[in-house]
Amino acid sequence: MPAPAKAAPALLDFTPRRSARAGFRRVQKAKALPPTRNALIADYLALCELDPEVEALRAPAPAAFFELGDEVIEHVADFEVVREGTTMLVDVVTDDDLMRHPLRAAMIRGATAADGRPFAFETAATIQAEPRFGTVRLIRACKRTPVTAGDRVRILHQLDETGTMRLVDCAGMAMNAADGVAAVLALACEGLVAVEIDRPILPETRVRRRKLAYSDPFDF
Image (cartoon, rainbow, N blue to C red; front, side):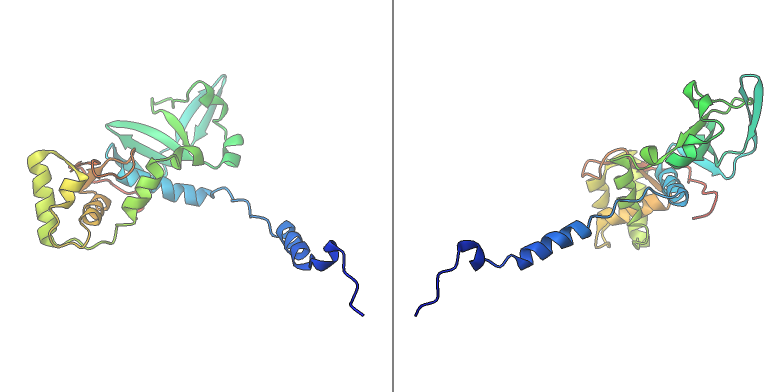
């Protein structure tokens, strides 16, 4: 006698499907943690290293005094930054640190020390802003790229002659390098050339000779 026909639901094996659903509920994508203050400081120093407008950093900055109404606050900023001849004070803060920073209220109208040095915050939003943040990472990834003496002289001499070149043309001067672009970016990490960091790395990215090497306060 033939076996009785089973109902359609009974012919389906729902066990793997139920297990997969349960596993999906248990395994959820981990929420990205906000960057730590040390990570932000490292990223900020990398930006300053490749920013041709930054001439020098001092860490920590000399103490400064700020007038907040009838109160005078003494504060030691993380960095004293010289940018195109102008000296300013910078604190690198996480979002949580910003909420309880003693100068947060003063920044609503702009904070300036009694000696005239302007003060500013650098946060994850400003430090990791794109495309600058991604461009800096691409450049720093080439830091250990070897550049022969011949390629070094040819690249720097051509920049001395022309003033500014496109990255693709500048890379063409690296005759001994496996990757001419990486060779040029390695020279940027040495502080010998300045590369546009506010735009993505493109063939037309502008490169010029950097006359004044960046002064790193920690010798990174």
